[in-house]
Image (cartoon, rainbow, N blue to C red; front, side, top):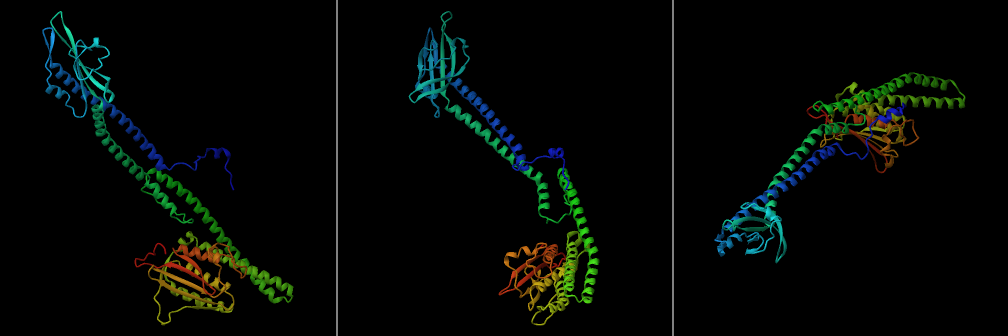
Length: 496
């Protein structure tokens, strides 16, 4: 076996057993950035919503402060406060939030209002008639709350004796937060739906893009271990076509290797048949010409070994013909399975009688000619498979056993069933699966080599059928071959 150099082995890619699937890898790299962008957009949207809520609240506070300022009118060197109950109710009319107001002159000295509000941090920096907005905390019966305050500085009085008055109107942050929340929901909900739609499109795109890989997997996994035909994937993307071409190259190399092995087996078996036939002939002549018992015993063992070797070679050649490439070369045709089994059984009756077995065909009792069972396949190989079943029964059923061959139709499943029953000792149920393996022998009796039933299974599976074994009561064995019948269109069903 060739050994790769260590330098080449070190260059081979290593795939860990826990590697993620390509689909999950693509989805992760496509959906995670969307999630990050969605979170970033949510934060930006929240910031914008708060800013616009502040702007709306500030505008309302500014209008309220101007309305309150109009209720305080300078008169000579004093102030006339015209603030009736109706005007107070208008300012405090917000049903969802509490409004606080205060008029002070000079700024900070309370003269009117429903709460004392904290003045701005730098009163001297205020520009008259221009509102200033800031956050402050005030004490209420319900505890300390944070409010948004609008303050306006007004000048009044005669020149040279001017005074200043400050009007403050405040609202708690409840309405601001509610407005910001509404803006965020109204913006984030469509954004979330858009992200979900994009995620669905990404998932569908990844699934569609990886569909050729799924088809390639199905094309490979649905094959039998000996199906080495090239993979057809013409409509796939270029990357998958390259992969399919690489797999086809590997399959072609394996197919050539298997074909070379089959040719070697066939050639070797063919070349061995002639010397083995000569060896059998020479031992038969020697057995007739010698009278020495010891020498006759040795010659008899040589003759049996040659006979067994010839039988093994014949079965190896049959097994080589049952391989897929050989079946394709031989070809298929339509034939009547019932007639084939009848002719084969009649040919094997003399041999069964010579070995002390009673071989017969189970025919309909009414005497009518049964309808033909038409199969599409290789008649020579099917004949070889049925012959191996009957031969196996003749070899191991024992003297005096009855062997019955039966052909019937399973109309419900459109298949033909060939049964070979014998009244021999039977096969233990523990060996029912192993007897179809190559070179397995359930007993040391007889001259078999353990290939007969393996050949039967190989041929039957090539024809989309299967072979079964069952134990008969009180003793005996039933071997059944199930083969699909040709449908009216002319093509055999896919399986049984």
